[in-house]
Image (tube, rainbow, N blue to C red; front, side, top):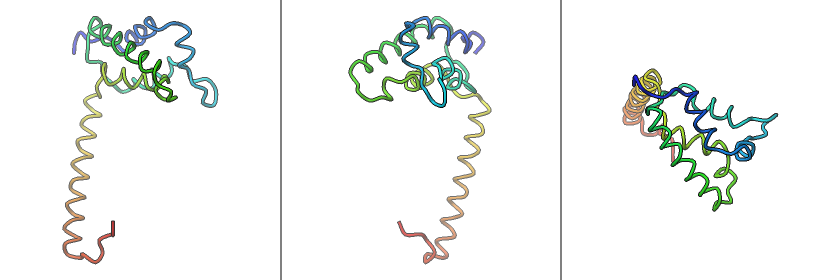
Length: 132
């Protein structure tokens, strides 16, 4: 964890592998222009990088190459969007922070308890169970 690349360095690396034309194409017009940099900033917020700079560089190269190949073949608008690239990079380069993972764990535990209580209730009152 000590030698991981910062989000800013990762964003600079990503931009260094893309041409200016590609960066402009990845911008989205949602109530004004939503640049690719803004998409990355929003997509990477609250996450912790898991690789050092050298490994991150290799992963970014692979992800961008796969994105370019997929964008050349696909006609789907999402497959050629900046959101897709940011999502792919997020999966490869980051993980959630410890706090976020703990919150999700507590939510799953709470939901499991609620489901168990609901099952017990429906065992006592099967006529009240919603039909599927």
